[in-house]
Length: 95
Ligand SMILES: [Zn+2]
Image (cartoon, rainbow, N blue to C red; front, top):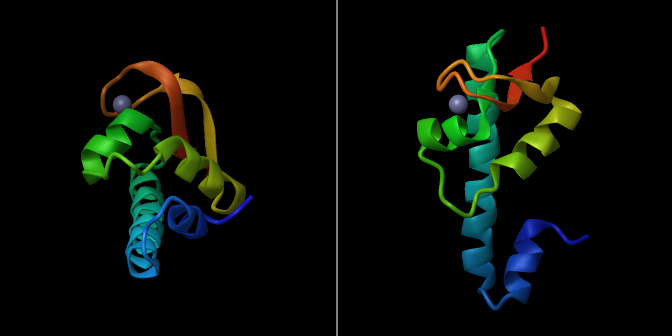
């Protein structure tokens, strides 16, 4: 599978646009990781991540967190979100 920025070019964006697009995504990943890490040991749902960080609608939080969960000790499971108190899939930093 192609990296996001290449797929963006495929859809007709210029390479400068693609770079900005890719940069924004990497930045979003950093912010998501920082937020989850600050909340530890509490968990947070995707919806609250989007609201807290004011993420662009094209940042797919579920994908981003899945990517993080492979590398940063973040786990996804059903649980209660610390912010909205809903029972749903939440992300949490493992201790
Ligand atoms: Zn929530």
